[in-house]
Amino acid sequence: MHLLVIEDDPKLGPLLRRLLQGDRHVVELAPDGRSGLELALEAPGLEAVILDIGLPDISGLDIARRLRAAKSKLAILMLTARDTVNDRVIGLDAGADDYLVKPFAYEELSARLRALARRAGAAPARSGASLESGPVTLDEHLRKVTVDGHRVELSPREFALLECFLRHPEQVLSRDQLLDQAWPYGVAVTPNAVDTYVHYLRDKLGPAGGQIETVRGVGYRMRAG
Ligand code: CA
Image (tube, rainbow, N blue to C red; front, side, top):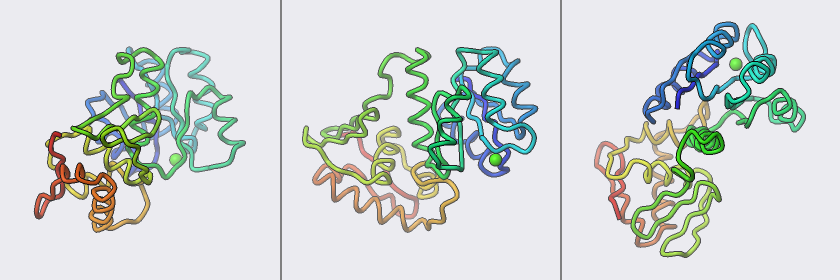
């Protein structure tokens, strides 16, 4: 997708751009509301805006209202630090299609974007909705994992980890890559947490957990099933 990130946080903005580019999106980044609004109104072919609600100059809510009035088809995903029902309702009323409460894990953002793309018809129907490797199946819509057809209950972090592995089969993923993608941004965790959760995940997958291999000194890789 062709995306615009409007985010003033000097770390989160560039991090999101890097991760989204890694997922083969075309990404533009605006560090304030004014430049973001201009880019959003003028960039040809723009499909979605990831919009922080708290910006230094123009409020994300105002930007959402103005974009919605000008470009009815543009998907708007709002990022908010406030987790109150009222703020979410205001955000959706202002024209956002969906919202994500900070701190969030990149995998959560990525899944919301795929849902928006499907709704907009920008991607083939159900593309990315279901991931599998051998006996392991992960349904992104239903947040459901099965092994040989039997349901396995995973915690949100285990689910996000498995999603990373399934989306990058045979690829060696470092602990830092896994932390960036499966853990909420800004939450203090050590790389050891990755080892702990991979261990939990392997246990819950049973024999199929053996597909997740340790790559000594680097991280982990999931073999194709
Ligand atoms: Ca902000």
